[in-house]
Image 1 (cartoon, rainbow, N blue to C red):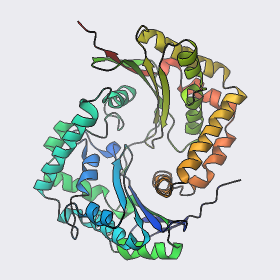
Image 2 (image 1 turned 180 degrees about the horizontal axis):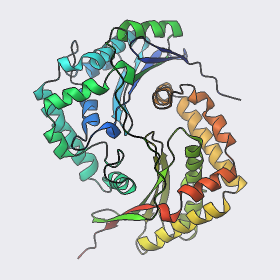
Image 3 (image 1 turned 45 degrees about the vertical axis):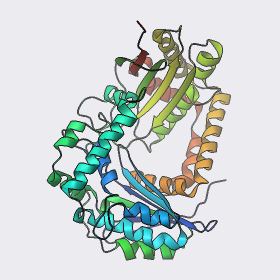
Length: 424
């Protein structure tokens, strides 16, 4: 039976896209905004700005004091945060119904009038915060830079996905206040934003509230998008080897995949699941349970809209096993899936697991709002949450085999290895 979450959409005169999905099961509303700016939209020499603005947006705006966005909503029992990714930045809060007007007022203030409070002092302060975040999350933890390394190995220099969302600290240091203000003015506008409301509110009241708080924000043209030419699989393996103070050897394999939101991407995603998505997957059964040449195997498919996505396989290699032997086993299974395709039971298991995590995520009001915003902004498909499982069930074993043969061959892999330092 198809899912039938109610979703109504409207575009305000200034270009803001609004989605409202009533759910009166609890007296709370999630406010979720996706802005079409991420690290993909940064130019050479100016990386890290999209993520920097995730921080600056909490430092006050025309009518909201520094730090007040957190303190005012948390005082009302709200939960809130923000994240940055390659294709977007999102801001979200779940608040008791009576606090909805406050949440919308503050969101509108910073999305329209942040520059009134953006000073050199705020910029310098948050630049230092980002540097500390990089030290804690990337530089001073085991494998912390692995995904950054993998993106740089999968995508050529100059490609919008080559650099990480945290960006270059040298670029952040060089960013002037004028350039930062220009970046905000270019990317933060109603026509580049989706507002989703999910929870204890009617469709009419949701649209009225969106108009009341966001309708007066000045319209501006949507910013130009970076080139999104399709990028095919790698034609030969690429690799980067590191020796660091890590608990055990680890292999990261990266693959270019089709652009997110396409049937071809979904087929590739399911192929990744057959390989390493479950404890019954091929790589886990062979490498962890049978041959004991890995202690853990995992995978991830990361859909992106800039003409190409990325899939990853991660293998933890125990002492006494070489990285080369573990990698060779992965390559054999890649070739086998492309040649033979999944068995009916393998595909059934991956489809069932996809259904489980999808339904589980949609049960949470905030996750539902985030999924609506994502597919409305990036794919103009706010109804995706209701149709996704139907699309999954339509994928055949032959399509999964073709996806594996096209995108997941050993010759198409990028490899980043982290090897333990040997004790003297």
